[in-house]
Length: 359
Ligand SMILES: *Cc1c(COP(=O)(O)O)cnc(C)c1O
Image: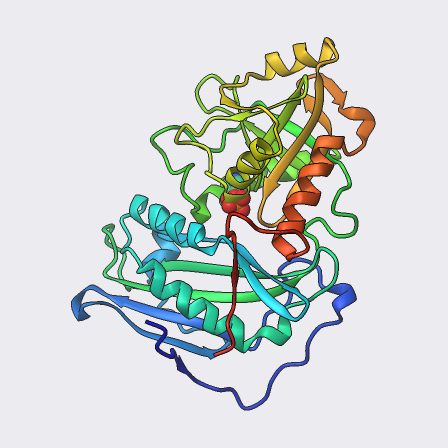
């Protein structure tokens, strides 16, 4: 099982970036993992670790034209010299769900996790150790078959690239964000691809994102695609509300991305004794509850941003300020617990951390 993946060494290693100025997703390591699929040659083959470099792609590659492209995002952390991944099994399970929805071939989850561990082991010097820093891991799969006929491709490429990163929004990771509730465009509808991590969902969100930015907001909160009434999720995060000390979050309904951070926060909150409800939440309910003084905290969850407090919500002609634009106590507690377990500062009774061995 832990057979060594083929490894092509590069001549010279790159210079590592200044750890004080990492940003998010701007620097890439020396190597990447690559895997090819050919339905004619028995499927997935040629798993290897190669120098990070541009790839050759036929201009007619179907992934460029018809959008068969799915991805994942997870992180590796370093603590006391040890490098760990956080719930990586969940990411490989989810990439298979996304692949399935786009009629792309399944991967062997264990084989890819093993390949990832070997890649991260080789790159362990690239895992930053500072507060809020991590090695961001981006697996993705896209169609490479050349041809403009519309059909599921016969050839695909899977790559995993690595990027040493600081906190997602730069600077203070717990600075409350300003959110624009989008009431014109929608992100996804049930029966579509909203639950899958596909590139097209992001392409469809950029116009709204730009409009929100122009008006002084950081992110967009999406409403459901049919009634535009129920809250779904934020840009690249799931969303939680604290009403009267109780956590509420939209239930997974097919159009919401089933976040691993969301799932972990729900488990963690329950363990800490909070009540958690997954249900429909209308924007009107939230405003009513705000007016009654019962909407205490709002925060988003996602691998990149971890847990991110929301300070402002703008919907139609109203703008409301949550908890005086400060990080609330429950948000702070969940953030501390979550990042404590992730980084290895706190115990991990659930076994969420996966240590990267030295091969
Ligand atoms: C990836 C993603 C999330 C967060 O999922 P995590 O598994 O917690 O990182 C939320 N919404 C969208 C649209 C996403 O693509």
